[in-house]
Image (cartoon, helix red, strand yellow):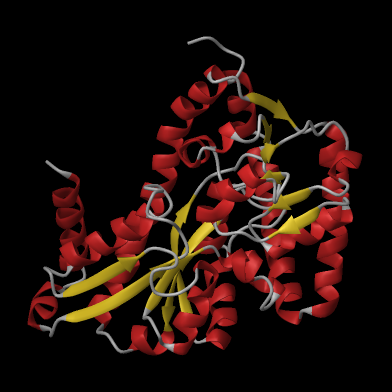
Amino acid sequence: MDRRSIIKRAGIAGVLAAGAAPAVHAQAAVRWRLASSFPKSLDTIFGGADVFAKAVKAMSGGKFEISVHAGGELMPPFGVVDGVQQGTVEMCHSVPYYFYGKNPAFALGSAIPFGFNARQMDAWMMHGNGRKLMNEFYAGYNMVSFAGGNTGTQMGGWFRKEIKSPADFKGLKMRLGGGLVGEVMQKLGAVPQSIPGGEIYQSLEKGTIDAAEWIGPYDDQKLGFNKVAPFYYYPGWWEGGPEVDFFINKKAFEGVSSEFQAIIEAASAVAHNDMLAKYDALNPTALKQLVAAKTKVLPFSQAVMDASFKASMEVFAENDAKSPEWKKIYAAMRTFQRDQILWFRFAEARYDTFMSSQKI
C-alpha cells in the first residue's frame, strides 16, 4: 500500500469517527495557496507542506486542495507571515522564530536557546497550554497556528575555523536562524546574519559570512556546506527541538466548515510527525558520509556552552522587560520545562546515555 493510500484511509477513518464524512462530500470545493519559507530542494522541511497538502486533499476526497509554493515564488521567504496576516495567501509554512523582530514572543512558538527538545515541545504544546497561549498571541496577527513539523535537536553549524573558546566568536559573521539567537551571539561577540536557507551556500562560498547553521546532516549535506566550511560543531543549543508551524489566516480558517477545520488539524499532525521521523531516519547516513568526506565533527566546549547559557539568560531577562507577551508565555514554558527536565533525567536520559556507549 502506498503512502497516499495510508494517509487517505487513516484520515477518512478519523473523519468518519467524527461523523463528518457525508458533509465533506456535500461541500463546495475549496482552493487555498500556501507560501513556504523553504526551498523546494529540501524534501524534509519544505516537504512537510507537501505532505500536509496531500493529506488534506485525500481526507476531503479532493474537495479541499492547497497549492504549495516554495520560498520566493509568491513572496520572500521571511515575508510569509505578512502575507497570511494581510490575507494575500490563506496560509504559510515557516518557523515562528523567523519573526522575532515583530515581537520576541514569536520565538517561543518554535525554539529558544536551551529550550525544549522535540518531545518536550509536543508535550507543552498539546498538554501544557502551549498551543493555547501561542494562538492567543497569534490572534493579534490575524492568524491561527498548527504544528507543521520538528527537526529534532539541530547541529551547531559550519565554521571556517575552529571554535575552541567563547573568544573565538568575536567578530565572526554567522548566519543564524532567528533574531533571538542573534542577540545571544552578539553578547558573545559574533555578528549575526539573517539569510534564507537557499542563499546560505553562496554566502559561505563567497566569504560574505564566516559560519552558518541550518539544521542537520541530511539537509546540510544537500546544501553542500561541507564543501565551503570544514568544521561542523554540535549541539545547536539554540534549537533543542524547533517546531515548524502552519500559520493560517484567521478569517480563512473560520470561513471553512468545521469538517474542513478538523481535516486541517488532522493533516497537520500527519505532516508534523512525518518530518521528525524523516530527519531521524536520514540524518545518520548523511553524518557518516560527511565524516567520510573529511568533515571535522566537533563538540562545542564546556566553556562555550556555559558562556552561551549565561548570555541567553541575559537576553531572556531583557525580553521580560520589553515584551509582556514574551514574559507571560516564557514563564509558563519554563515552569513546564522544569518538570520535563526532572522526568527526562531519569528513564530517558539514563537509557540514551547507556545505549550510546554500547555496540549492537
